[in-house]
Image (cartoon, rainbow, N blue to C red; front, side, top):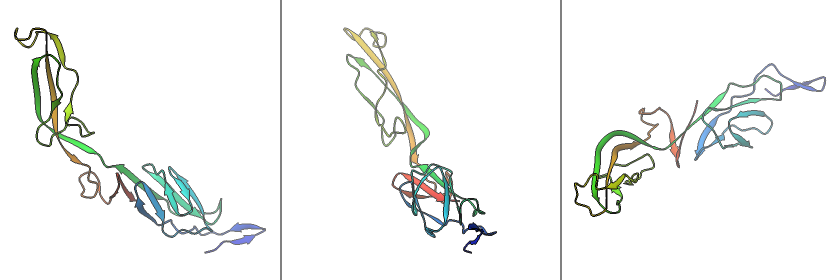
Length: 175
């Protein structure tokens, strides 16, 4: 219903249509029933015409025929990052030797951290022959790294949530 003018002010007892949203790009939503004649109230996102960008998780949108008139039902935009999830310790890898400590690497698809690094580790312990039993002429090192099994977040299969779509590096859905 289009508002009527009462004393030069828009008036209606009906709320505007609820915005229909679609997740259309990495972290972006589109108002598929957009109308330039409606007043939109957005929280947690930036709106330019029918496009919602810089969307944070639980961003909301409502519509009204004009400011101060009844508002539509609220639609909520949900976003979640597509990241690695460490699932279980596969193994601890230890290396002991003389001289400069080399990078320590995880075997067979396991990783050190959620960034996906497979080699590295802290400098380890470096001390005069504490770990090498007299075999090193100078310093010896010992380094242990923990290697993890992992999986990607999957919000479409019910593992982490349900009803999300992955676009780029961000999962999104409308509730």
